[in-house]
Amino acid sequence: MTVRPLTDADAPAVSRLSQLAFGWKAEELPDTLKDQTWLGLDGPDGLAGMVRLRHYEQWFTGRSVRMGGIAAVAVHPHARGQGTARQLMTAVVERMRSEDQPVSTLFPTAPGIYRPLGWEVVGTLDETPVRTVELRRAADPGRVTVRTAGPADVPAIARLYDQLARTGNGLMARTGPEFPAGAEGVLEHDLVALAELAGEPVGYLSYTRGKGYVDAEQRVEELVATRGDAAAALVRSLGSWDSVAPTTVWRGSTSDLALLLPSVLPPARRAQPWMLRINDAPAAVAARGWAADADVSFRLEDPQVPAQARGWRLVVQDGLGRLEPTEATGLPRLHVRGLALLYGGGSSAAAMRAGLLDALDPALDAAFGGQPARILDYF
Ligand SMILES: CC(C)(COP(=O)(O)OP(=O)(O)OC[C@H]1O[C@@H](n2cnc3c(N)ncnc32)[C@H](O)[C@@H]1OP(=O)(O)O)[C@@H](O)C(=O)NCCC(=O)NCCS
Image 1: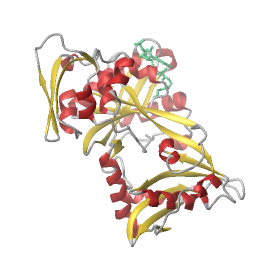
Image 2 (image 1 turned 30 degrees about the vertical axis):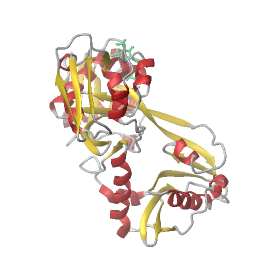
Image 3 (image 1 turned 180 degrees about the vertical axis):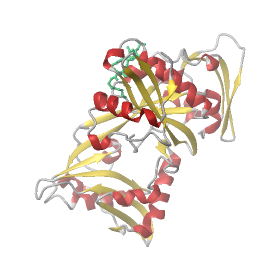
Image 4 (image 1 turned 180 degrees about the horizontal axis):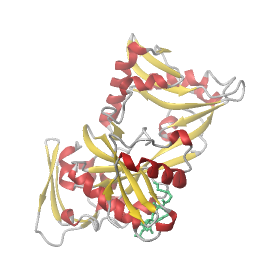
């Protein structure tokens, strides 16, 4: 079986396999593959496996990096357990390398599927049910006011999101064909609130009110604030719904919300992991931002991409990084999954504990900066 690009003529087969593998409803099934990238392979009964490659950009410490988003990975039940997914994923890594997508992100149904192929879990997208009444206990918001946002506020909201995304690791740049609604997409939610201080936007909140009169569950899509009083004002505005929506599902980092409330929060109801792969280490190093200068060498291990499995010297100067090939011997081993962990904000100690790095290196931690990985756009 050889992997081939799927065309629009494959749409019915893609629909059938999606229905089988993911239980998608009729309205969720793709009726066209036009302007989309899919790879697949054929078996005796038709399409045996498929994967969709999406084209995104993701922020890593101040710079945005081209990212291949992996979605809709499915293998027909009769073709499972024979390396079909492995073959597809190996081909899609090659495809991403040729499309200048140095990193790749996916939301796994099971991390064990993608670990042997070089992806590693770097973060989770949490959904935490909180008693709405607790949200009334956020700190005094001082002079911050909250009002309903409208179309004229869209550029300010986009700027607030960008400001947050640029400083951390993992949030997507919401531009390009994968975001057809563009910045206006934020207004698709039931309610969007804007926090202002002296007329300046300092945060926003988008959420869904939920169904029901006195027993609704409201759902936060995202809350972004540049300062604590803005976050408190927005959390309190959510809390004002407690009489009709006793539960609020907080979407995003639960620990961020915990910093704003005096009570212990319940555990996340869902913690969807997301995984990162470094497809092209020199390009990934050159594309991202860095927290500190470094000069560190290691031997990269990557069974799926022999082209990058070798000795490298990482040099970071004036905020720019480069990987230079080195023939030095005796270098500490860094598995490509360990590189993903570091790239996504994990520590070299965590990589070592997971068996993905041979020796602790504070210089690596300082250079990568250790900003926790976040993502808000599920695909
Ligand atoms: C998950 C799925 C794509 C695997 O396809 P497959 O062709 O059987 O996978 P492969 O035989 O190529 O196995 C690839 C690796 O994944 C591992 N793996 C496969 N299924 C797994 C599972 N359910 N849980 C954990 N690991 C799994 C295999 O052990 C193998 O690792 P190894 O090479 O170290 O042995 C297939 O079972 C499927 O379509 N499932 C339903 C849909 C789904 O969950 N898709 C993933 C969406 S993120």
